Length: 550
Image (cartoon, rainbow, N blue to C red; front, side, top):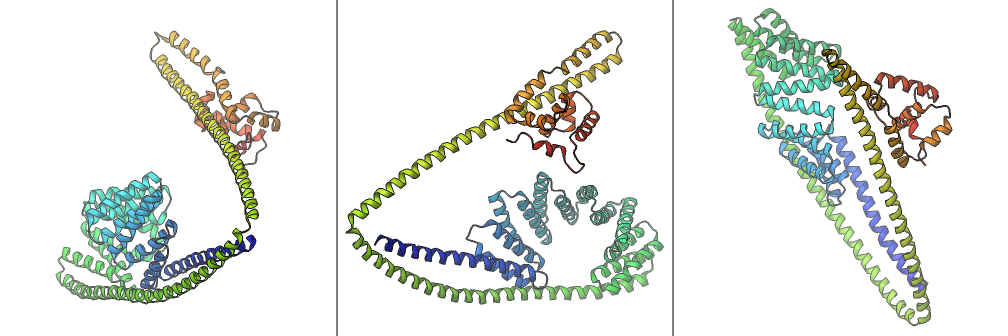
């Protein structure tokens, strides 16, 4: 009887668990599907990308799964930035910021700050843009993320430029440039030269501007970056106008203009025409200046029409997203109705099962002896589990105590080592000052020499080494034994060097402890590698980590 009741209960518990598990599994599959579709369409249909990302976010929004939420929010903020809906992009980036703060993900926070700053710059809210770009830079500095730091400095420089803060813009572009130089980012360096050239031009430093533009041009020519080459040619043309070298200016502008006409690049073409107008005004050739002004007005009207078309396209995208959302909401409602019907069936089934269980329970109660026996067995089982739990807790307590002792001994070892390093460093500094004093004055030469000898004798005392060994053995009790067993021909000095290397001390720290030069440490290290028969590919410190583990 008891077995029957338990079997029925287990069956329905498993049934319910499987139902919920299947639902969660299906939700995660749908999430992955929507995210993949959103990523696929972000370059060809932003409206679809936004729609799929929103559906993905709805699935995961209340689950508390931050990793999945970040995926969806990243796509949404990027997509809205692409279509020029900067306020929406800021809104989703703010959500990313909150998630980053919850899990203390500093990189996520920094990237969110950077995107928010970019969106505010596009909205010409330059004060807010400056604020968030500065926050991003603070975070990337703390993270020591030089790649993103260079990008952030560049974006902040652009914001300062828009705000006509040319000196500040120059400073940030220069910082970005220095990082790119350190990381050997050639294309980034070329772009920085161009940015610096523009700033130099604004500040009236035309010679530096020319040098920067020419360096940028040289790199882009190497990589055959034709658009960048054309853009810099135009910048050089405008620069030579200011320098009064009109023939050279015309050559550069002409090269850029030919490329913009060939590729139908309206924005670059407008910049070329503006440069021509300025050139011919300076030459007092008002006929050509007027002709190019006429071309400029025609192109400007074309751009305005394109701007209207772009705005219409944004409205169409918004409409498409709204329509698709409504369709999905309807589909979701239908799915909810289906799920509701399934739940009703499950509830009715469970109700019938409960009634059956109650009837079986009434019959089961009659068998008191079986029940008593069952309770006794359960009680014994409970006592046994409590004993096991107690033993486990005791083991845990002993382990925690052991870990605490090891941690304390490790800190003592580090403290002792650093004390030796600092003491020897101080002694060496004093000895250096005394040597200088000895050279400067002959009067106290004897006294100074005696002090130096006394210092040299104290530096070589073994007291520090004995103190170090005591703490070292507390943390790595088997290190020396295993090392000597494996390499019995090691000298005491080599064993000492192995111990210091086991702690990952730097060459300078080991040199200070042994009172030798870093060059001497490098030679000792080389001899030790040969004695240990280590290949070039094997790291000495990692090899020594294998000793004293047990």
